[in-house]
Length: 314
Length: 314
Image 1: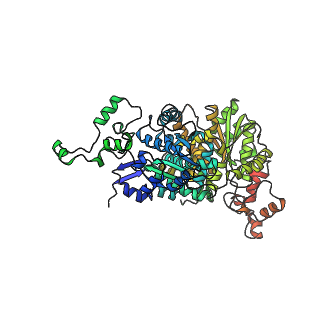
Image 2: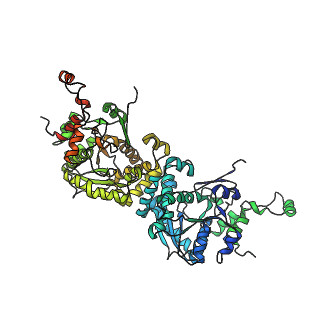
């Protein structure tokens, strides 16, 4: 079978076959049993927009037994404004916070610098003026969270150096493929991010809510954590969302195609135009459409409703 | 002509042809004119153990006009104890300090971690208990110096990230050859080290006294500085020492061959034994030796005298 899609932290291309992706990445599908084990799961879980996990049961068990756990996720500030994809993560964050998790919120300004060339002061501005207010508005409890910038956390950089010291070039290549020095540097920092809660608190189950294209970092982190010090780090868990398709029909809203993307806080008139021009599951003619109905599986407007705007399942 | 030696920051092998090395690296030889322009030069300059430089005239001019300049060098703590090679650098440091330079002394604990696996706490101990006292004893003015650990300098790591963001894999490969992730990580930090005085003080001529095997870092730093911001960074200068040959006849005292190396503060009995077993320029038989005399150019004991122990030229 020909490879028709690519999903890496830095590139998403083609039409994603999620069943195949789950298999290739070695994830576990979110199933009925897990959904019914989660107390009061938000609609993105019920609909399996949150589609897979690694060691998710560890977190379910912490919730059930009311034991502490950490939540960690990172937001890049590569784009000037937050977008709808960030909303899915925000929903997971606030859900796990309500279930007793302590949130570590990473502003990935080093990643935005080394991979996208965003200067640190601009990254800081975007975080403070755009991303953190948006997350707050979306229901994330920012006040109780440990919010930090990658660029201002020396402990992170010491751990990143330790990680760099125990991996080989060929191992990195196996995991990430061809990467730039900036991507390599950012990867070491990101692995350190994911282990930061345990670096600060000691071993504690950690859930990382991310879009599925970020799984490479999770896999690499788990590989590294095993080798660093088993008594110091438990393997982090992760829950993965599907990618919200771009309005132009791409598999992911892309910052490089503005018409594919819905920013949070975008003007009504702009939004209206983008959605009216969106790629839908409509048939070629009105006649065909009446006969066969729309095709929701390729319809970006349907995906918007499923991922974001219709919250009632009934 | 067959390549018979290798000189990189991480590997020195073969019999070094310094004339060819100077040419290949694009250095300038230390000549009579420069030696006579340096006020009261120490014997390692007079004998051209300090054998080459880059933009050394910039520093000579600062000394002549009594204008400020910075001195920066780094000491790895990969070996538990300082050794004779460190002494050559210490001599240059104290000389440039006496000529008005302000010293930045880097403890390269991140490099020792990422390249040699030395834990940061062990690196810190070695620096505080062994290396800094040794440098003090060798005449370096530690009290007026800005002494720092790579692992405790967030500004360094932010600059390293910026450097990682502007270089490509192929460029790195051209400069360093095949490197491990740890070496790559360390290189970005080391370039940031060399620019640190200017990051803190603004543009200022900086002299980096190092052994010639470290030139790759200098070249890379100068390449990067040109691209970062010309108004922010002037190109650093460097003075290079020859490598003190190992007592076993290797081109460099090697931490992996204890009998090749003289540690500072080693016991007399151990020293005596090492030197008595040293590779010399003696001929095969006493008869030949009487007829032709010794061969100083390959004699490690002669090199010890020339580099270290006989300070009087007359």
